[in-house]
Image (cartoon, rainbow, N blue to C red; front, side, top):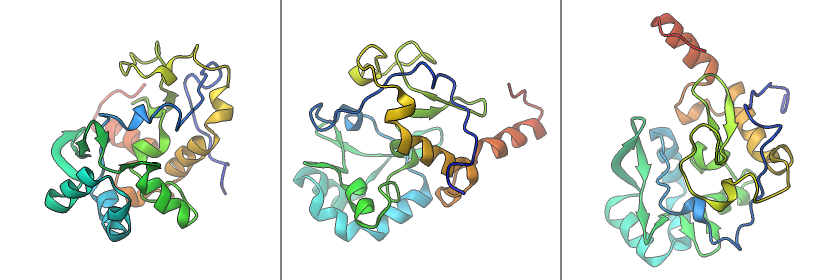
Length: 196
């Protein structure tokens, strides 16, 4: 039942966003180091032989030598590595994982969920928000996160990212190894933590 899941997005009515890749050079893939769950890493491993030829030479050398995740963690999850300031999977024509997924009919099937939903993010209270300067203490200084940079409503420009977030909330992406909001809220309530 695609699209039937209600998705609470804090600032969707006012947010403006327009991805202008490739003219921007992919700053969202630059020094971002997204977390990649163990399950997501296992799925990426299944296409590594197809991904390696797509990678930049320096990135390929690192992946072949020590893998694509670092020991650094964000929220307890190991992060993707970076070389020459870009994600290891950033290729000359965009994300190698995105391209491999597109070949199979789902651009998001190999990308970490954080990359798949960008610029959407979880708000920690059971909902989502569009990352924008001035919202939720956004600290990343990307030009595209400025609400004055575009007149395009995020609700229009982020249709596929919003649908992916709905897939996550429905449980269609549970294989990735993270709890949906409802499960996280229930667990917090059982532990006696306040959930707003």
